[in-house]
Image (tube, rainbow, N blue to C red; front, side, top):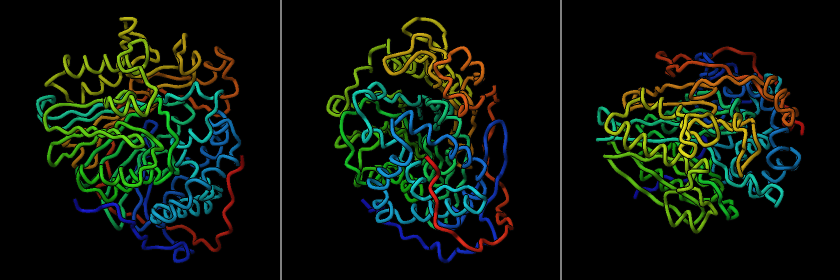
Length: 479
């Protein structure tokens, strides 16, 4: 197999771009909760444009990040950044210099606009999904099983026209989910063009939803209950970004993701190649992984591994068949909808119906709670083994794509929730005062419509700005 995971030397340096008269990118559109942007050029150029264009969105991260770290890692922001710097920074600088250079650009671009977000802070922000094991203790063990997202990918006889259909919704706390409203089109000077859903400051998707000019599309659902400590080889966010930008085939994605795998974020990846009509479920833990590929069928994800070996050797998860749990309930419901109700008829319209579904197979009724495909922990009066009742968490978006859309780097998305649920911060915190400390950081979510996400037809970036006269030493966001 052709090697695709070599280090990619960045072609630019911060010194070269100490003065930037133009932004190599632009905001395409802001609509119904989404901010759609594009960035172009070499690593530093792309990052600088990211930092300048999204400075208002980055300001939201600066406000929320200390609280997120306190809630989920039970430590101060300064200590969290310190640990990330020790564990991750040198790996990125040595093995992924292009990604590091892009982060330098983001930091400098934000600083130009008055937002101080250091490179170390950006590394910590991008590393958040993989750092939990370094801060786990008995008190924090309750949050060990991270049930994030529902998703599926289908092809061949499973779909209406025989081509690929993919759908995904994000399950996360509202602190994080409200920040993941950016759609970034990336046109690098080296590698593939791609579009991904991100939070500002991310160099990878984070929600893990992307479409590439190679015809590769992808999403994932977390594998919960892992019981190992990451090795901290190459962080997952660097590996998946490398795959998006340089991977050409499904096999190359596997190769890139397995090389120096840190085991920092166990996932069931769902990939498709619209050129070959083949789809793949690639599950990866630390030392275990599994691969299933087909041109005629479907795969779905709901936070329990399908690989018996991975599930039993690298996780403590027992939810797969337990319909009283979120994973078990969604497993049963996704199977029923995809392999029975919509079998042979799957398209983007009924894909939206699937990922906005509220049927609870345990209670045998329609109800918005933590067991539904469109997850609503914020409405769950009973809570779960994972979190307390009415926890501000649940589905924060929905996305669907088919082969025709993917060939044009297009998809359809709905921000806030796949079902259009309205969330009012003041009302929720008044009814559930145990979350009063969340109120300053949470944002309202409206009933937004499904919208078409498209790139610019005309490729004319370059917006004039004032040159950057002097770059002061980077200042970390305050804990």
